[in-house]
Image (cartoon, rainbow, N blue to C red; front, side, top):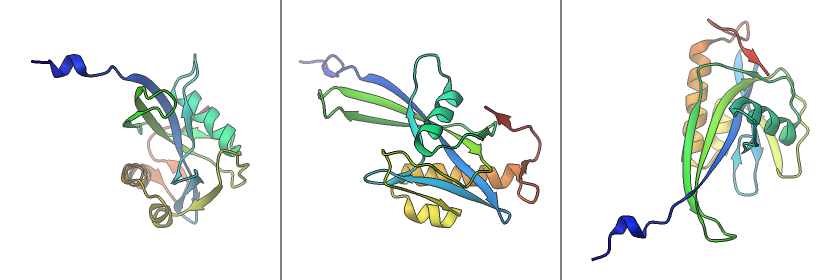
Length: 165
């Protein structure tokens, strides 16, 4: 009898980091969404050697939408895991996506060629554009965290300094 454990292929590990970018406008968070070919989401990408999660999220956000004044909010870090087969070599990939929250004061976005569009949206509009359930949950968690931890009148974190990269 074959051992099913022995038959399992070992998955290649990949790590991507991204940021849920928000700006306070009229005492409500506005979220930056980017349009990938098949869905709306957040800027993200692979971690390069020597980078930590914040550095990767900052670099990817700059490369994808041109924002430079990100202030990462401590206390929020969400991880999603996806397993899939590579369309190139049929290898099993186990990919982790780490998302942080970052505040910006910029409205101007310089979109990269890897995206089809971008939008600044309130929570309800962003939730209606996002299709993947996991990304909807990520946005809901971020929105709840911001509402709980931010003074939306002053546009600042209630109890801690915001970390600027």
